[in-house]
Length: 261
Ligand SMILES: C[S@@+](CC[C@H](N)C(=O)[O-])C[C@H]1O[C@@H](n2cnc3c(N)ncnc32)[C@H](O)[C@@H]1O
Image (cartoon, rainbow, N blue to C red; front, side, top):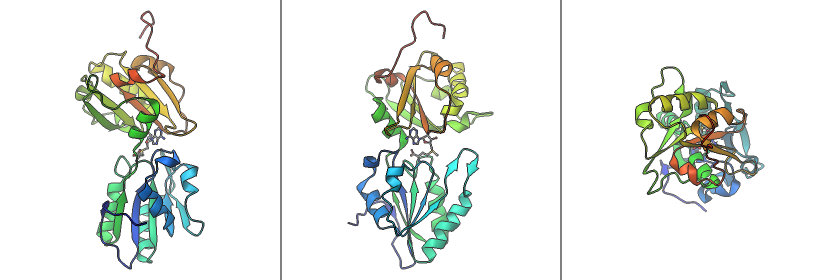
């Protein structure tokens, strides 16, 4: 099976790089196209957040290269990843660059494409289910809703620190769902900024950890209560969703009227 239509350049005898989104974890959220490219890979360069069930689909004969990144711990620096992709492709190999979620959503897929273009390497980008879509569906939180939120914004939570470039006044306005990637460990700063810019402290908010996986947990309540009560940050990936649609999550527990917020 060879499907087309992704963002790609023409394959050449000099090898090809497939930048493939592996989705948020559940193996059956992998697209057919992603599955196909993995099955035909000779080299797979992969990240930390790829679920073991997805890694199990890599052919035995393929060379696996782990370049995982945890916060502050880069197994291979980004430029080293570019060099690896270019080297393997120049040696004529079919290379899959396997990334969590979607390669173009906080995944540095854009930088990898630029590096391949600069080196004249043929490539294809295969989209994946991004964490926001996967976690929202798995936790019962619509990202938009005609009555509650007519827009949704994806944000990099690690930019909530110091002189944050995020437009907090715009983000505090009603009628939108805010999804923070890499934001769980900055929950207190994010909540502080939003509330300081006018967001009501009891705005529904949720943390979805290990979204779509068997180990998924969801904690949903008012934003200030979430800051006070959310379980400690751990190694599992976690997504922070803030907005009125979180009220529809089956795990949502509103803050009792008498409890201090
Ligand atoms: C570097 S970003 C990569 C995002 C990825 N490209 C995507 O489209 O989902 C990693 C962040 O995505 C979020 N994330 C990824 N998978 C997740 C999951 N299964 N459950 C919750 N959050 C997840 C977490 O916020 C994590 O810190």
